[in-house]
Image (cartoon, rainbow, N blue to C red; front, side, top):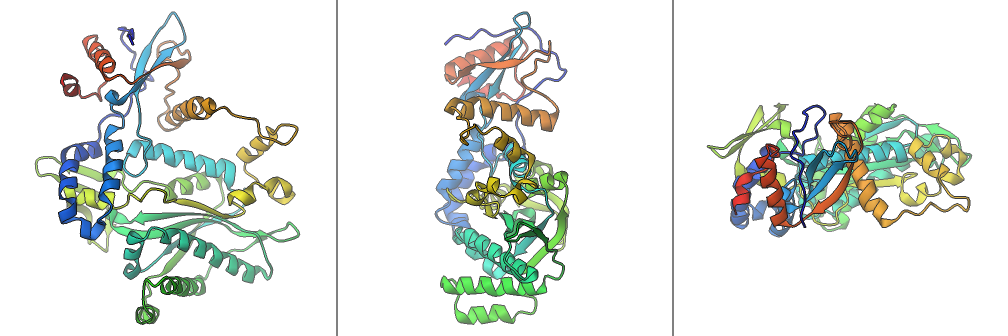
Length: 443
């Protein structure tokens, strides 16, 4: 397939640039292969003997993110008198490692929760943590996250019922995270909880919580009983855990959520990736990674130094097995219950605007308008990508930086030889993408 490339210079104003190389890319390029080679010998006992294949799978996708040789889309101005164009490489759409794709996922999730799920009523963030003695079990059995999530919702529902003196319908979104500061293994649960619920008469009952001592103790006993029931600990260990004065179990609910901005911020926070590029520094000559953070009393430092392979081991331990769900919805926010919102006027009054728009678009017979597969996988995805770039960087990749006209995808190119020819031509005419490694074109 032959592609004609415009050789006109590009104006720098409002110019979109695909993501370039970053510190994490460099670390993976220089050390990931060796890390995989020594994993069984040096890291398998601690991080899991069956984790390597999954790590390789996710690492391979991350390494391919933004690599022009893996495929590009050609985007061109619709103004025939302009003809400006550029090429966008494919992304990995990953979450666990890729900072760029993780940020897009986080923002999309926050938008979805704020505009389509969370009722316009007071919410509060609850954070549930377990003692260090039990954290290792979550590494070896990721299904525990689902079990504890259900347990947490049952506890909140019981306490709400007791506080209200009657049955009420409440709601919760829960996200588990496996990472703490400096990437240490620290499984915990972030919950966005409706502060109250609806009774049988449709009235909203506001239930604030202040003293969490009883709930924390109840949480401790419920978790210990769960571990006992599943034969993960014996009765002696259970009694030992119950005897600790400082139990290691904790619940924090100090953050109240009253505004859309707070809903967005908390939704992004509970779905963030394990590592931020702003915290990393790489020393290539020594093969070390410096992790900058706020002063941590546990470590007694605000900068932690890793050998590169040790850093990769700490980071990749947070990659879950396939099929593990991070975000769960309970009560009024569960999919089945949410599908019946339209039957309850008390919920409709407090429903988010996005949900109301969808209801207004229902056809006369009550069925949703059909969407073609192309709309979902093609047009809709491209719009989301463009909208997120505009939101994050205040740049619209589908607005021509020369004439302001609309730009459209006119071709998708996956032939490596053709892509190399295009990239060589772009370099020749002074339009080489800065993030392209031209040494690969010599292969």
